[in-house]
Structures are given as structure tokens and as C-alpha cells.
Image (cartoon, rainbow, N blue to C red):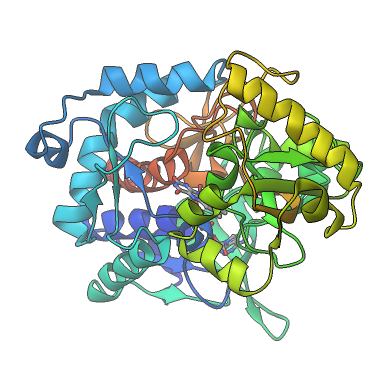
Length: 456
Ligand SMILES: Cc1cc2nc3c(=O)[nH]c(=O)nc-3n(C[C@H](O)[C@H](O)[C@H](O)COP(=O)(O)OP(=O)(O)OC[C@H]3O[C@@H](n4cnc5c(N)ncnc54)[C@H](O)[C@@H]3O)c2cc1C
């Protein structure tokens, strides 16, 4: 790897890989350093879905969409945000980003038309056929290899090199106590958020700090720490995506279909404690607040629908669910108060059959009233990923608190201010993570090319 580069990218998730490809295609010398032993990060754990408004693929499918409509959808779900301009920018470049991924990078993706996703009024997510992020990452890595872009895995960036009031490189831990300086005219922070850094989660998102982190291990928040040292502004720091029901002790996701289709969640006393239809992300903090474990209860019809999902079928196979003919027995099988659980489900069933609202303000009952036989699963809440980060301009340049640019420093994906609102778990629309990763990665590279050409 050359030690004098145009662009050095920190992190080989979707953001970093896109940044490197776009920089290379602009004629710049570029390399990627990746902390872990393989590329992918959270991008590999995702469904690989990238939203785009008014893409060629939507038009071919007869779907009428545009950036303005997408912007309204996102603002509708995000509510208050520290960076409305970023939402506008991301929605505006979404279609060109997805078309670039497919046409120029060679990612094998298709428009998902079978169902819409949270926060979208039309079908606009584009994903690998498998709906697995690892396939998107594999295609991006193949594009990096085709271009002979150096990608050094097992090489963690440990600090930025700063001189003459600009960022001019990175010090990398090259293993065995060796450090290596890599000089670059532009450094792209593509190292994701701070989900794996407990003190930062406690500081910025205390409501979810007690939950286990369920993302990739590399998200240690260096971008936030280094940015703060340089006086960078931070935005939307309290925003995150959570998950209310990770099966315990199995550690796999209990499909939210179980709840969406009419299941309920009770506490160790067998009582419900909130409106589960807040969604898997929004309800995570309620599960965390009520105690150590919670218990999902649903019925045979919901079980059969959920069995279409691979991870759910595996959970059943691995004995992650209990089954019984009564709610009392299926709750007792989890070691919780069966009589109380039966009473809770009875009240819920009455509300469901009458329609309207139940005691916890739930109005969406799916297939309920629940019918025998019943299933239960012990669950814990999790933090998937953080959504806030460094303040950036329209082209991913990192900004100080006074709005000035930190020369030589760019950020995208989970390292940058997100588009999921200012706070909490309710502002996240499907695809917000990968759109800001892919679009800002590409924009960072284009901005670096322009800045270098201008002598910056
Ligand atoms: C279970 C799960 C499901 C998800 N589903 C979706 C979805 O369907 N759609 C969606 O849009 N989003 C989804 N997300 C969120 C999405 O995956 C992320 O928002 C997105 O992948 C972030 O991309 P990134 O490139 O910024 O970070 P990552 O993909 O995490 O890549 C960052 C990389 O940087 C490396 N790194 C970190 N620090 C350093 C360092 N100091 N030096 C060198 N390398 C470093 C990391 O090891 C990692 O490989 C999901 C997340 C999870 C956990």
C-alpha cells in the first residue's frame, strides 16, 4: 500500500467500499483499511436494501415516485431532525446512487415490489435477490478487487494525522504493536457509528444503553471521538434502531411478524406493559425498562405464517419456543405467572374482538383474538445501530460547530449525521442506514476529487 494517497478510506462496509470505488473511478489513488479480519461490518448483517425514488426500475414497474414524495415520507416518520438538508440531499441522489451501484459497480439488485417497508408510501427498496446484505458487500468487494484497490483487513485506524489545520492521514495499528502512518490528501470516515461503545451509548442514548448491542463488532465510535477532538459538530446523536425481541438465550431475532400478526409481549409477572404495535424498534426501550426478560406469546396461525422465515424456522428447530394448549401453560413453561398471563391475554382478546383500543392504546390486533394452541418465547431487547454522527455538508465534508469545513475530512454512513430524526427509535425508515452509507460514500469521493483538483 502506498503511503502517499489521494484518498484513504477507514472501514470496509458499504460506505467505505462505495467511497473507494467512486474515488478510483475519478482517477484518484485510494486504499481502504479495515479493522476486522473481513470486510462487511453492519452492511453485511443488513438485508442489503437501498431505497431510491424515481429509479429506472421503479419506472419500469410502473411505480410513480419522486424525491419530494420520498422526502415527505422520511420527514413524516423522522419528525424533528438536526439536518433537514441532509434528508433532502439523500432523497435527491437516491435514484442515481442505486443506478450507479447496479450499472457501474455491478451490484446485483432488484426492486422489491412484494411489500412496502416501514416509512415508505411506495415500493422503493432495491436489494439483492437473497435480501442479504452480505451479497451486496460481496459485489462491492468484487468491484474493489477488479479495480485493484488495496484493502488491508486487520488494520485498525487508531488516530488521525492533523497538520496545517487539515487532516492529512491516519495512523494504523498494523499488528504486533507496530504502527504505520498513511498520508492522504483526503480521509473518509466510513467506520460506522458507536453501537459497540458502551460509554458513548450511555452518554448519547441512555434509554437503550442497557440493551445488548446486536451489530457488527467494529462499530466502536472512533469517528465520533476523533471528530469531537477536532471540534466537529455532531447531529441527531440520540437516534438509533433497536430491536425489541431477540430470543434468549438463542441470540437470534424473534421475527416481529409474531407480534405484528397479533402476538403480545408480557413481563415476568405475566402482565403486558405497553403497546407492542409501536414496532420492533420503538418498543425495544419499553422491553428494556420493564425488567431483565420479556415473553412473546402468539398462536398457531401466527406460528405457521412466521415459519416461512428462515431464522424463525431455525429458532423453532433449536427449541427456542415453547408450545402448549393454554396461555397459562405456555407462560408457566417459561417460569412466569401463568394465571396472570392468561388474564392479560383474555383482556387483550376481548379488546381485539370488540375493535377499538385496548388498555395499552393498541389498535392494531392482527389476527387476534389469539386461539389455542399457543407459543411463547423469552426475549431481550437489543441495539442494532446508532443513527447520529458527525455534521456534514451536502457532499460529506465534515463540519465544525461554526459550520466551517475540516479540510481533508469526509464522513458517511453510520459515522455521519443520519436521516432518522433527532432522537429515539421511531424515526428510522427502512433503508436509512444503507442509503446514507452508499450515497455519502460516493459523494465523499466525488467531493474529495473536486477538492483535490481545486488544490485543497
Ligand atoms: C441486524 C441489522 C439489520 C439491518 N438492516 C438494515 C436494512 O435492512 N437496511 C438498512 O438500510 N440498514 C440496515 N441496518 C443498518 C445498516 O446495516 C447500517 O446503517 C449500514 O450498514 C452502515 O454502513 P457503514 O458502511 O457506515 O458501516 P459498516 O457496514 O458497519 O462498516 C463499517 C466498517 O468500518 C470498520 N471500522 C470501524 N472502525 C474502524 C477503524 N478504526 N479502522 C478501520 N476500520 C474500522 C468496521 O469494522 C466495519 O467493517 C441494519 C443493521 C443491523 C445491525
